Length: 500
Image 1 (cartoon, helix red, strand yellow):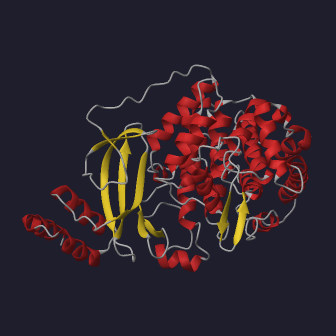
Image 2 (image 1 turned 180 degrees about the horizontal axis):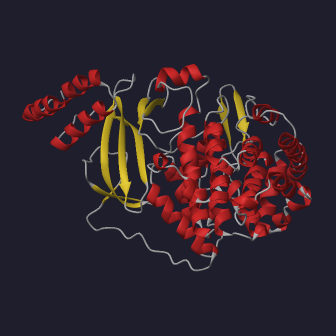
Image 3 (image 1 turned 30 degrees about the horizontal axis):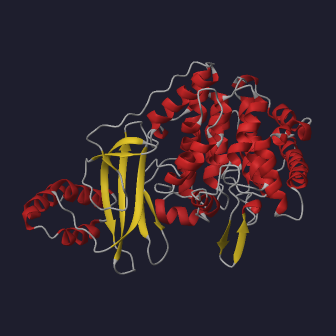
């Protein structure tokens, strides 16, 4: 099998699985799925919606079928941060990609969002982003951040540096510590990268699940040694980490190695005995409140489902998507990336190919393959002189405006929405942009002032079509009353008549 189809399979199935798993991430039962989608399990994309931004200043995010979440967004941020030699530009990632991602992030957790905010400090560098944040009544320290926000984005590093495991380890570690300081987050990212590198050259018919687990677990502690920590770049990070903790990072990492090795034994046992898949996933912490989003438990889940369903890969992805009560989008994305790396893109069902930015994922896969083969040449994303600088603080844009936003470049505004929250004197501005590079993003900003009305024919038609596509007939009248533009009345009547 050609490397190209495996690279495309890994990236596309990661994004596809993320999109499907995002739908189920906060669903607790099949009854809940039935009430919202009329099905007891998810196997295709749906339009859906969720509340974003809190009770007083929030808005309804109407999510188009096939949209992916922060897992894929951050993966793409990392992809653009990889240099032609395979090394990651962590200064660029931390100071450009990560802070601007906050403006279009979807479904992100508290740790990664706080890390992205804190890295904007002048005093913070990619290897010194020590911070803490409030989570209810609890203060969370960077050193305690062990979730999977690092693992979800490192697939491109593994693909760009295929078969150079020491380089992969160093680059994954360096990118992980921009946002996460606990060894569970870091080792989870390293473990996924290793698994991807291990599975890429294997043909589906030669894959042996028990041997795969054995290969990962063999000489595990030596395999995941961090010899590069002696470098000055990392030595300063270690010194700062250790100053703020009762135990050293090295001690914490060693404990996590032992813990993970024990869990790998559970996976092997699960493959060679009659234990149910649910039971194994439960044992490694996928549904417990304290560990369900852990970098270790979710990556191990992806590895186990890959092994369990290696002959029926679509079933493996759907198992992850519908494993309710777990971190479904991340587990599904890890499962999809590994099964895609094993089987290639040919297994992708037709109904899944309308995932968001399918063609851009194709391009990124080609770029990463070129980097791994040392044949990559970068094309600059030059700015059109007529493109407006995109500033989300200003409600000055119209549909089809050409705008420029670093680091994504030139794009066209495809949708504008404004929603009134409970707080008076403010409104939510939501703008969709299709970028020339191939990525599409939804930006949102809470604006102070009186909410601007729809101003022109294109905007009115866009509003009405959106409401109808979402089957919210009762909202159409509400939106029309906000237009307050007599010249457009006839247009509105004609559209409603044609759709009656």
